[in-house]
Image 1 (cartoon, rainbow, N blue to C red):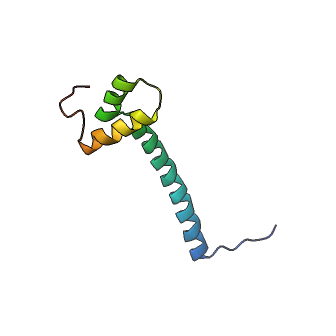
Image 2 (image 1 turned 60 degrees about the vertical axis):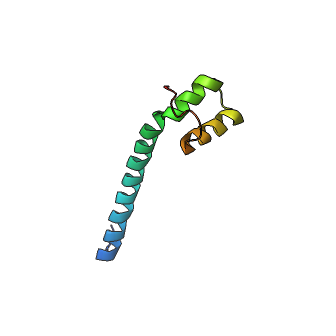
Image 3 (image 1 turned 135 degrees about the vertical axis):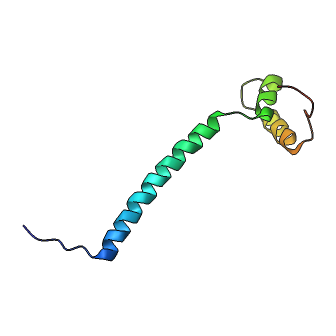
Length: 75
């Protein structure tokens, strides 16, 4: 068998790559969890335009988030 020599800098690079991949996996899981929760504007748009995606619904969500519509509506 051949002996493999690994320098300290190579070892540090390997560890950094492993840590980065694990952190990116954790971040992806957290993003998925956050996406599941709908905000108030999304719920109001669902009630007004239905659960299907449409340009009208998207525009209404943008206006709601800007504070132009549905200020006092309870959703």
